[in-house]
Image 1 (tube, rainbow, N blue to C red):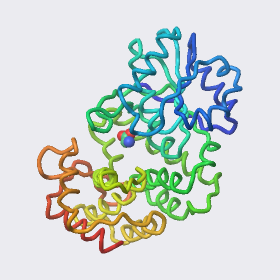
Image 2: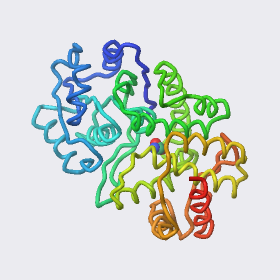
Image 3: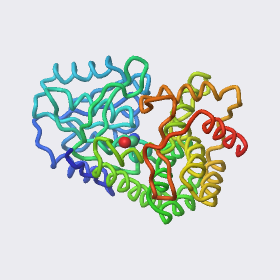
Image 4: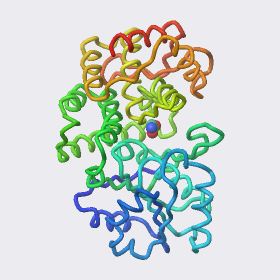
Length: 351
Ligand code: GLY
């Protein structure tokens, strides 16, 4: 897989011109959703190279990460003279960069594209690493391809208008990157106050975080092995996320991952010897900032069912990425139902 160039911008327009110079194109298109068209596009619209670009606007939100929306993007490109030499800029959160990456990678067998993430979650996760896709048949990211953007342009100006919850949602993925890297990164993240943000410091932590993801992706771009480290917290996190939608208590992705991390670090403590003091320290940080997602013992069966339906599982044992210590990653670990129910007991006892 081609390596993505990552630009951490100090001046959005200068960096954008630099990014666009890295690709050859005849026509340029910008993909936005209704929100980013309103709040983010104006920040780049005056750029010399963006002025004449065709702007495509899709509906915002994961519900619209559909084949219909992709078809709308292809139709716009096709009707507006896009060729194999055209390029696209995806300006938005993870939904826009996932869908836009897929639309660009399949249009005329693939045109180059640039991701400009406008959320912290997008910058630290979706925009980096080459996973693109859409939801299909009720399943998240069921259709897609590995196809990296040529450039990821990260500019923290966009994050300054995010609310506390959306900052925390992205920060959970940074915390995950801390846990899978080293003690220094983890303790820097735990010492940061995400409620009272120093944006310069956030940018420094973000750069480290993106590098951690970049390094793992470069070792295993197609997720055959070590890239599974990035799934820490996500097996339980996805179950909490789906459950929250089913129960009309929708939660942001990063919150579900943070609660999933509590559960999966407990499994790590039981099954792979993760140190108790680091477990306690991480739980304290998550509880203080993310609160709790309440479940009771009547929910265990259904949560377990949500996990066993996860496409990563081959039997009724559930597959996890665990840690033997911070940075000591153990992929392809499994736990049975009894262990998983014990994990939920621990999660509830530590609410
Ligand atoms: N979101 C995890 C990955 O990119 O592999």
